[in-house]
Length: 408
Length: 228
Image (cartoon, rainbow over all chains, first blue to last red; front, side):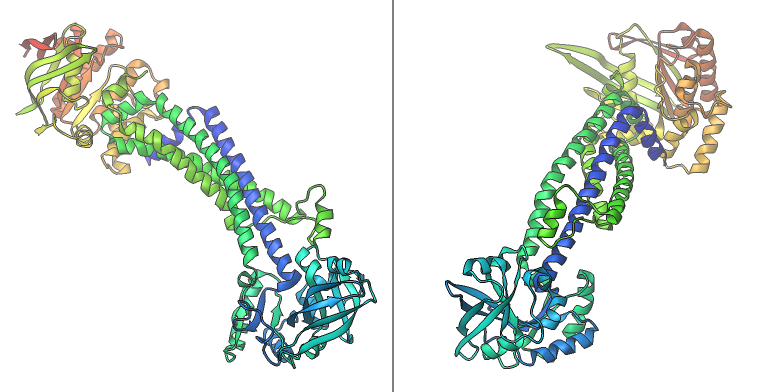
């Protein structure tokens, strides 16, 4: 206890120096809490928007389809199964899809296109695409030979609302799949892959054209958020347990690129945070080293009184720990206050609204207020503080009492 | 029984190419409960000898036995433990820990020895009262006079009941009246607790209190006077 008291009082021998170092720690901790909170909040938003845009949180597929998406890897009674899932998890946002490829031809041009058969009545519940129609309208359950296409595809193939497209592909049974559809809508998702290559048509038409019968390739399930998805995952797994030919896939499996992009972004951000943490570490090292050098004589005294060099080193470590804990607490508290403010009011900057509208993102970001967001940065600073104190503490281990007591 | 025993003790400092013999073949035995004063001119080796006996410095050659233990070959941690359990130090410039109060300075050593909180508080207050500092226990060193600080240093040196107290010119920074009070205190502690005292000094006043005087010159004992 007396060592703790000694360490605490030693800190306040030079209040200005301690406060300056503490100030640097608090500032960095606040910045780190805010940046990490914002980053995690953005990742949540990014994941949710990406999943809502197209893939959903979970998908039921025929086993092996995700690795090798072929027309013949479909499963039967897809719409009935989708309805069973809806009823089982008590969630409307469940929709069946079928996927194929076709050569699309307008009057002047031909392009390859991914054709997606969707349930028009429920697709809007699992995807934001139906809400991003910039011309015309989305598919309706009563539509027959209609389609919506991406804006870049429409521009490239030179079609407009009301124009016809001829589709030629290959059916499940190897037969030629051919039909003519009328473009009723053009969407602009901001996702170039979708805008350039995607055509959607009613699932019933798709099944007819591609000889699928009542099959489909996916049942897409969209939950309110990632936590909600985790909750329904086990229920759906139980529901399809008696279908060994079916697999339930989570968003990480469905979007490996998204997970990798987040990890890459997080790593590059940590490089910047690392620089900040190292700078604080050097600031602490400077403070502790100065303080140790100033007290060489005093350390000589306590060594002479019978304290082992190791225990004297612990006093120095204790001083750094106390300073680090003070910086941790104050920094985490101010960071939490900042994050909570922006979590309620949203964080935005110039031009963000326009960009958000363009990519179907909100105009503001909301930092995450979670234990990890509040403690990750300050925890790293605390560790850096303790590491910075090791060298000064080790210096003490080499002190000879007589020589140390001669120091001025 | 000897409290301190030195045999052919040598300490050589290297100053460039010149070897300075701070202690040369010192043979010395000090009885338990003795009150010994080392004196001699500056550079005669008084402080070096005290440092050797206290395990604060290591000899170049020779043997030292303190409290029945050979200390000349001990490791640093073992020496630290010996100092903590068996020795008390009083330094010329008090050397109190400035951020701790008088009581905390005294308690510091007791706590390092593992004494319980209540016991060490009681002991610290008792000893501070014994050295005449009742009512000043909560003052920090900067709030005490030189004489009062030296008394705190004495209290700190004896709180753990050491067998041997080493004092290096303990009155050098004190006026003669305060120095006399301090010496009487040393004598009283020596008689009450049978603690061995080894002091170094230039001061004749202090020498009058010692029962044995040892004169050093050029690192050698040149006189050993029994004053009993």
